[in-house]
Length: 138
Image 1 (cartoon, rainbow, N blue to C red):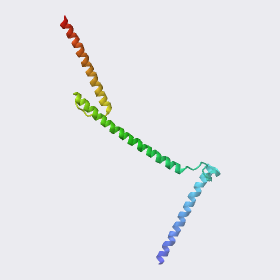
Image 2 (tube, helix red, strand yellow; image 1 turned 30 degrees about the horizontal axis):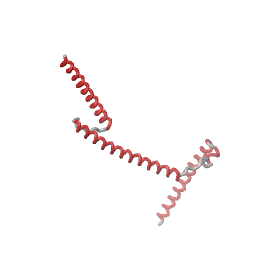
Image 3 (cartoon, rainbow, N blue to C red; image 1 turned 90 degrees about the horizontal axis):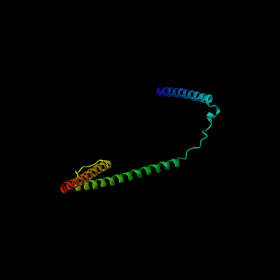
Image 4 (cartoon, rainbow, N blue to C red; image 1 turned 180 degrees about the horizontal axis):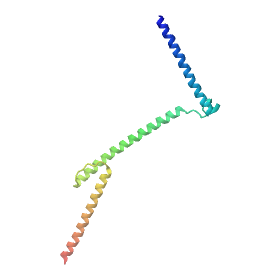
């Protein structure tokens, strides 16, 4: 029991020493605050406190709006994939080589180039037929 009493006495001394150190730290902080700000350093903040209910509701609304936007984007991407499949099937039926396109812009550029080449071949057929007809008439 005697050893237990000695241990508590040391703990009390240690606790008192820590309390003195903490008080000295607080007083040094108060001294620097008084030197820099003056007596206003102890007055409460003049700004009104934030309405935490409003901020919480605002955050919830923003999160829900973001979720709606993401789900709308997913729906649009799914519709775009279906449209791409339909376009590639049409191209395949027309005799074009069947390719899977990663994005719609490459499909559009491919179809535009295909249309341009078809127009060129149509013009050359028209030009070739008129020139051959001219040769036949002469």
